[in-house]
Image 1 (tube, rainbow, N blue to C red):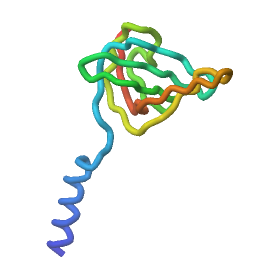
Image 2 (image 1 turned 30 degrees about the vertical axis):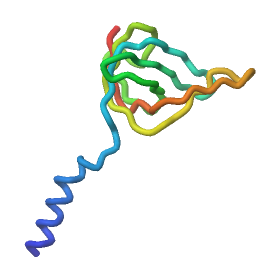
Image 3 (image 1 turned 90 degrees about the vertical axis):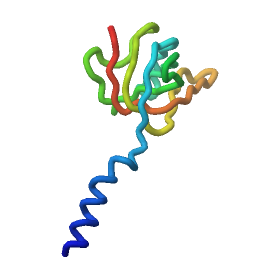
Image 4 (image 1 turned 90 degrees about the horizontal axis):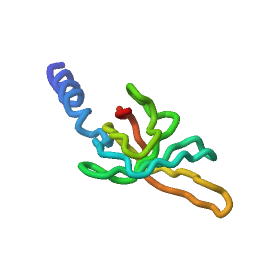
Length: 105
């Protein structure tokens, strides 16, 4: 019985370490609304920049989703996703899904 309880406690302690979300943050250089799949593509600068995609499943705090260049975003990102910007010619942007974030005004 003691071994089982110890094993369960160890699993409970180690569980957060196997999470695949990673932190990101920076000033938005590009913000593009993608109307075809209801997402927003954003390209962030330093300190932890890259290409990210806001989805309708993203948990947004304070000022909501990214709306314009110059905003600062900070949050967690997860798996790769896509943004269909236009259909003719087909323009697709790829990035990492934003899981949760907060932004400046």
